[in-house]
Image (cartoon, protein in one colour):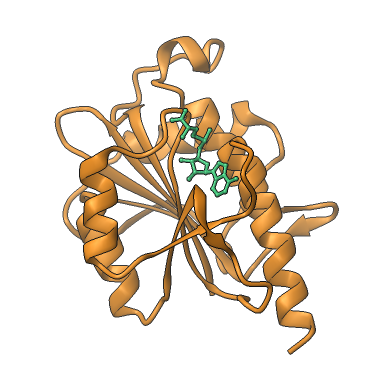
Length: 196
Ligand SMILES: C[S@@+](CC[C@H](N)C(=O)[O-])C[C@H]1O[C@@H](n2cnc3c(N)ncnc32)[C@H](O)[C@@H]1O
């Protein structure tokens, strides 16, 4: 399984945002929608071996939205319809355990530590993507890839990730958009998996 984690520092945790103005009303959920698109979208289908975990921090209680390719339905390439799926998930009562809102989309309360701990407990190797990290090896075909949003990652978050054993890796010196990084990581992991 390939996991992506994207930290949305100002992303709303409630469904009261406008699909007509995502950048202006949602706390940049549009950025996260593009990451979901990059994580799953193939030309004629979606990747089934991928999960995309979005940490929404723009509210009093941090929430995690998980898209799981094994069961995912109703995902289309446009941001608006992905945001509508997220809006629906945010309208259900989230507790500490995952609840499915639509097929393959789950929500729970939780912070970065609890999410990373759960991935590590599943046996996922942790990779924190940062421009100045060590080059991501071309032999990596799975793991949990952790990315910041348009504001990057805070110092505290970086310390947490390092303390949990995340390796700091780079896909080049230029600062790219998180969704573009995801396309590149998928491509690298696909190549690595093929040549095993
Ligand atoms: C838009 S960038 C953040 C830009 C910048 N750190 C800032 O705060 O303005 C979003 C995320 O993509 C990832 N990223 C961007 N370029 C990268 C690269 N060349 N190698 C590894 N990760 C990268 C990082 O995880 C980063 O936090």
